[in-house]
Image (cartoon, rainbow, N blue to C red):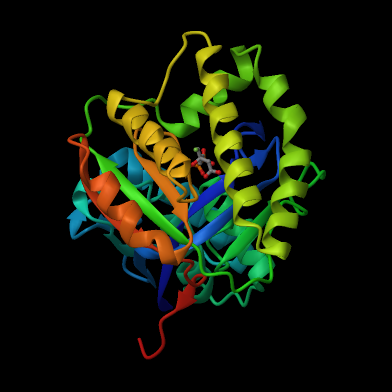
Length: 325
Ligand code: FM0
């Protein structure tokens, strides 16, 4: 009744932004991401006879009651499916540089779903694992697979057709994760997307453009058209962030350093180096380029005072069970 799994985080090129069902975590729109080869979570789940409550240790420390409650809710889904009532001990380690502030919910729930399913005796397909991980955190359903991944939003009310599928491609892009100094506490993505759906007049405009963006970026992946991929990804991120300005109360994830990096990326393009940015629910910027330009992009962005550290990532693998444990 014990299993260990590892999952990488992912970065969306077409963003998931907004839910149509908050309990089942069903999205308003399709999204598309790249699973990275850095920043992963490793989680061991052990269902045990003698436990009265679920125990959750994050990076070696007992987690807060709120975090344990979230984990218990998630494990209840697993227990129901497996027909067991045993409580579990969960040990989870985030292998994310402390300064990074990289969202770990995607790698966290992908690893937890994979380990918990195995430990409970369930033998789930990747599709079923994706559906399970989605119920912990939406973006986690994409981290079940490696490389380019599409999360198909589905139509069903029970969420049975809302899961990720891999996109066949071995295109080795570079994703430079640019870390800035964290200046203020952010609006969490869960709260931010909810507020945006409920109050932003720009939300409808965002949704209206998704299907075109998705079709174009898939075309770009098929044709290895970097210019097109980068243009769509950058524009999609800008549109997502534009919706937050129309929310009530309004909010913005960017800091001055965020804009400095965005401007540098544009300068790089003017100087003939194809590079594009994308930004999630925080101030950090991810810069996309092809491997031959990695060094130049790295050097140029390192010069900015606001930049603390840059991590060069590439497409990585999907969630895996660790053998021999
Ligand atoms: O990853 O409320 O998965 O597509 O990162 O847990 O379902 O943390 F930029 C924002 C991720 C949102 C875009 O949201 O939310 C993306 C975002 P949950 P997540």
